[in-house]
Image 1 (cartoon, rainbow, N blue to C red):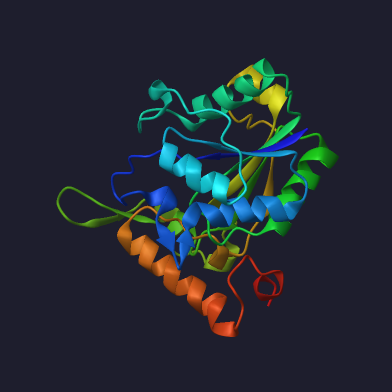
Image 2 (cartoon, rainbow, N blue to C red):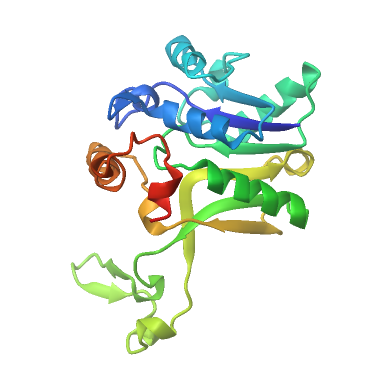
Length: 243
């Protein structure tokens, strides 16, 4: 059995009601639920939340909310690992043993079903423990600076100062959209196994991390430019993403 788990707690501090805040006309969590439904590979799409309001909206868009998350897993100190372990154990206790699970971010309006399906195929065909959605950094990380206490800049890796960017290996970051896990391995380690993690590489423009009001405004602007301005309805349109 394949399941999607979308953690969506209440109480976001930087963006009020972040997980259900309207993003260009509908709750942002709706984009994640709709993308999961369009993959047609999930037996169940579950939202793990501590909020009755979030639960109601999630159900309106086609997700299940079979439990309300315990209070000890509802604050910002609770790890995502503990939330996923709770959901997987709840399913086992209620007779639903999941083979593979996909953690989908609740605030990922650029998410597309094709990449979720690609991640599943990679996980299954390679017998990997996990598959992560990643994207490239916009510039080489080895040319990064930090600001010292005296206000001066210092290169973190000075030996790369004179090396052309094209000669520096490319590195990847979490795209903030989804990751797949082998449930048996995950429950055994109580975390994402990293020894055999594989990537799904997303175009950089699709990875929009939304943590602040400025991030939110930027994401809405990008979404309008990429999707709505071309006459699409913005519902994770495949043709637009591949243009």
